[in-house]
Length: 246
Length: 255
Image (cartoon, rainbow over all chains, first blue to last red; front, side, top):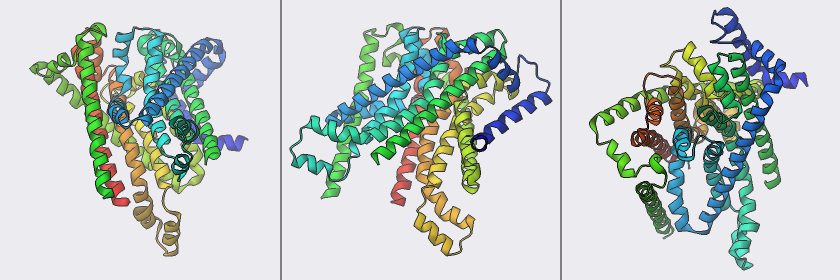
């Protein structure tokens, strides 16, 4: 158990050790840089302070992820039904991929207000694209000869979608989920930081203004742990889906 | 015959895509003119007018040069680190699980937490490049790891049977097999590097497109803010397109 933990975490432990040594050997003031041990101390001594912001951030990240994934899937299905719509929507989707969405947060905040709904919308936009792209390619990656079989059975378009294309898209949707979860917490935290709507990003902004760096970095560590846990959970889900649909 | 059909299909698709792009621009213009987004969504023509004003064009150009330099340095640094780490993982498989987790954890570090610390430790100028390098490192590490593992096993056995050195196998088999995946990662990394550079500038860099976006938002210079965002999107789209073309050429060559 310990050996497995060390095998997977040796590099992170090494990084934390280097950080601790760096803080101990340099003379930076504690309002500039703090050691990982003092952050850990704050996390354990004042754990309840972090619970509500962590739940807030997780809720908005997962809500936005769900909205973005659903919107991407629905649009991919619409494109699947028509070549014209597919061509028309692809250029907008490509534009959205190349646009750094995080840079749009100030604009979204102005358009929809400095409110939680904008936070949700930002995450949804960020996760929409992977869902649209992967679902689109999954809906077209059908098992060999399956289309001929469905044509021979005179299956309706609806039957083809439900019984053939959507199941074929599930592994690709699992990849989209993994890609989306990797960014959902981080984007939520940046949106909260900029709009100060609550959650870990807001906690970070407020505690930084108070020069309480232990608490600010504690909030970041929680965000990092949440992001890593969600990524690893979605990676495990993707592996299971791949095995099931292989 | 089949080639001609495929070619026609490609032209038709490109035509639909161009129409989609024009429709999007038209929708923006109409929404802006109708005031659907209030003063926050100006018409496209108002945003484009910003580029015709000399001093504003010069401001955006100066800012773009700074941001592109930071993103470029971050891209190169992150890509080099990602490749070296992936190579280490391939050379010493026992280290791979730890390096995998390190990459995920480093990528999960919120930029807002690193920004203030980097401003103090490495300075305002270097922060955007370093914040751009971190997500690039993750993307390239993931792409390079999967690319290096994609080499044909039978060819690997052939190299082994021929007594080829590790270096020869790496140069003529592993590195070449990893190229498509690596370029796919680079394509995504261009946008990510631009995001990193812009967010890095929000923490107090002296100049750059991130600073222009923030300042114009606070001063309610909305058309200039949109013009800056369009420049960021344009640069990302150009990088995405150039690497996409390179990727297609490599894939054609390797097919």
